[in-house]
Image 1: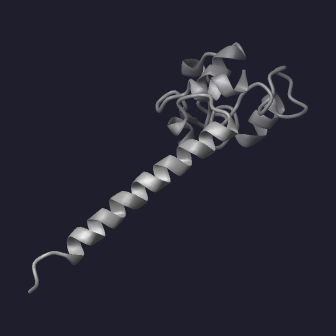
Image 2: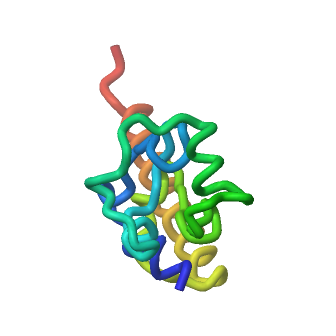
Image 3: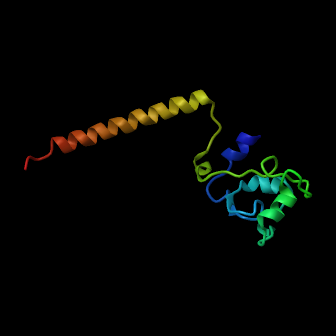
Amino acid sequence: MRRTKVASNAAGRCPAVARLYGLETNTLRPSIVASGLDPANLPADMTRERADALYGSQGSAGIKRWRDIWSAGHSVSGVGQIESVRELVVRTQQEFHLAREAAYQELAAVASGPAG
């Protein structure tokens, strides 16, 4: 479930909002909706103290940050699929080797360029 929510978040679906934490955070939009809140109608004047009172560990709203509403960094937009650790490592190794080979070829082309 959590992996699916993260994988389904493309850029733009992780808006930066200060309305749940009282400070600017990138929040997973599907988790806001799943909590029964409307992302378009969150209070614009949320302070950290008010956010803590509503959504903190002793909050009165019944919705808890981190448990129900998830934040994520900018790199969440790079997650497009659910992979095992093994698949991720293999793919990363392949990408590394391809990039290294391309860099070697570019260096070789520069080194064998016209003598001046």
